[in-house]
Length: 276
View 1 (spheres, helix red, strand yellow):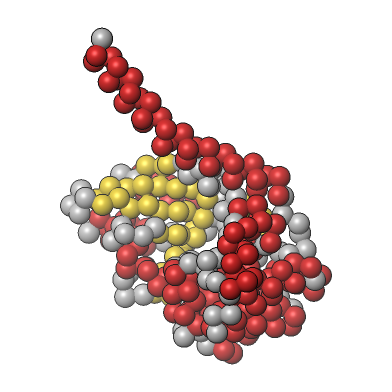
View 2 (view 1 turned 90 degrees about the horizontal axis):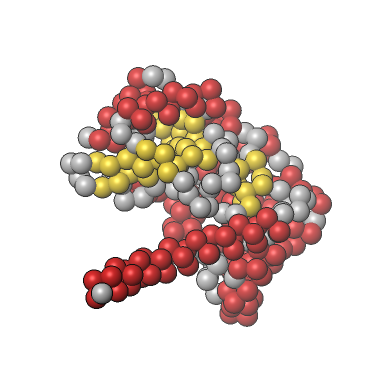
């Protein structure tokens, strides 16, 4: 009831939104098992804040998202179920790696215009657009310098053994789900409206490699894509800021390290205090 009342209020105020990714798991997200990722029209920013506040949601800071002004995190507690609901509010779609989301999608109007009502009582993104976004997000996350900084061991395993270490079970599940839902004509029409014929070919090959679980070819496909100007509109032409990426990655790792260490230090001090 808690989350359904929230969405009822959002709908009653005509706030334009769409749940834009991981819709395979939308039931889990509505139950508080998974996060909710809502793309909200910028004009409704203040209104969605008020609605969330009225339902007891509080704003929280995420170490991964604190540097992005267009992503805001909220937590709400459902007293009946005892579960926390985590909502990511997006006011634009900037995709890429967690610590360097430099590519801004330009088709927000079409996302809102083609959203679909689902039986769970929320608006979902068109599966054809969600499919393109899934491939685009992973293409940018597989940018080779990122991987060499953070996951060189995994890169070697993919190259030598066609390992799936860089591809989570969740990603594979989402891909299979969307691959079976997309409509070829609608998918191609969408890509052609915003990208070139070369990019249409890029997405087709990327999807084919994933379907066949040819992970080595995926990595090579993305790497070659970063070197070719004809894929520049996918975000490959703009060189990511590897300094900022490394800085943010290091800062996040240090926060995780100290969050694990500090409770132990605090406990040891209390223990020593009792012994005096």
